[in-house]
Each structure stands twice: as C-alpha cells, then as structure tokens.
Length: 354
Image 1: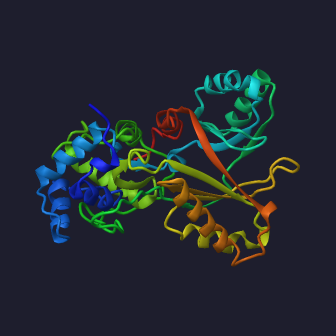
Image 2 (image 1 turned 60 degrees about the vertical axis):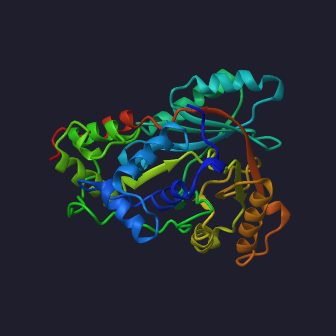
C-alpha cells in the first residue's frame, strides 16, 4: 500500500493521532471507550470506525505500531549513546563495520566537523558496553566516545498535528482493572514472554488484549501495572514522525555549568517540542557538552525557531556564549533496528518471582 502523506489525513485521522499518542484505555473494549471520549470532543466516530482508521494508518505507515511503548531501561540491561569520527573516505566502510554489531540498535550520520557518526548500543549485560566499543575500535581504527545517560529529564516523543484535540489531552489510562505497583525489579517468565509479545505492537482488533495468547485479565492487569511502574511509558498509537511531516531532527547540545544542570533540566524539558532531554558526560578535549535536548520540526524554519527557543530558555539561567552550544542535524539513518528487548528481558528474568 502506498505510504500516506500528512496532507492525506482528514480531521478524524488527525483527531485520533493527537488524542491517543498515550492514554489509550487498557480495558475489555478499548476502541469503544476511546471512541466515546472522541465523541465528547465533537469527533463523531464509533468503536468500529476508530478501529478501522487505526488499522489503515498502521498499514499506510503513518504509525510505526499501535500498543504499549516499553521503557527498555526499566525492563533490564542498559543502552548508551556513542559518538565517533568516521573519515570521509572510509565512511561507508566504518558504518558497515559498526552496523554489523547486533548490539547497535540505531546509527545516524550527523553534521559535525569531527564526531559525525552517532549510534545507540543496547546490551543485556552492562559489561558488554566496553567490550563492544573496544571491538569497534579495533575493527575501524577509530576511537569511540561513550555518552551514557546520567540524568533523564524527559523522554516523550509526541508529535501533534494541526486539527482537532491539538493538545493531545485525552487520557483514559485510568480505565480497566485496579492494580498496585510491585516492588520487583526483575520479571517473571510470563512477564518476560508478554514483553517479547507486545514490544512490536498489539494486534489491531476489537479486543487487542484478548488476542495475545494469555489470560486476557492478566494481560490487562500486567500492562496497566507496567504503565504505573514505568516499564511502559504509554499505551496508544506510536506515529512515524517522518510520515507526519516532522522531518527536521535537531540534537542540540549544551555546556551547562554543572551547578545549574538540576535547574536547567526541568525548564528545558517543559518545552512541548523537546522530545528527549538528558545530562550526559563530557569528554575533555573532544566533546565539551554535558546536556542534550532533541527537537523536531516540520520545516527547517520551524526547527530553527524551536532551537532558538531552547537557547532563549537556557539564557535565563546563564550567559550562553556561541562556544557553549551546537546543533547536530541528522543527515542519514545508517541503521535502525530498534532495541532487542527479548535479550534484555530474558537476562532480567527470575524463575522464582511470583
């Protein structure tokens, strides 16, 4: 099927995309309950019509999936961001060698005079990070710079469209079974299997939680509990931001004074167009920045405006000089396979947990 363009989306498509990038109900008839919430906001759809639209948007590539967005960091293992230099004349060779490592989940070419390759390493055992990086350095002859997350201020990649429900404020996550968070950090075997089953999305059917192959009540209770525990970031439609027109991806980096990071972080995270916001380590003589804020825009002009808004907010806290920040735009996706959650969940599974 041809991929849909943002101009092809009618007001009903836009309404459901805005409304349910989170907060989708975890209950027996979720599409009926979600459609009722839309009707309260003037969007005249019933459950079957809403289901059909979500299915079509998924088939057309407007969605990457529908279901639970799992927080890999809460499931087990670890991930880290790594930067490196790939010489122009060897760039494709270096990219091929880096991408050959199954632990490399994402890899991007970014605009920077030296650090022009950025990849995410995902491992079940933290000790593997250094091992893989040493392997990559031996194979490529290039030094790697590990930039693990020190503090997370925001991870909420939601992409709103012009149209109904522009604030995306429909939250039906309270519907469904009442649950209590557990104090376990590890997974049971059944929970591990559920993570493996739903990481690529839920079945887009009238009763998705009953189509998993496990007891439906247990599935609903577990997903809802995972949501409250932070193992699931949100449940809903996960859009392909490129299909929605968000083609400009700017990674802004900042040399924030160490004593101000705790104040600056929440302030930058509060900007609605900032999707990821972290403190990460510097590398003396190579990388002077300790603060990352990712922005997305639908045009180069919108992206530049948003980056300037980040700079203006930063300037409320300290005198930001030109040498104190930079923006690294991605120019090419070199690899994007996603985090291998099965391995990380398996390593964090205890047969004795109940």
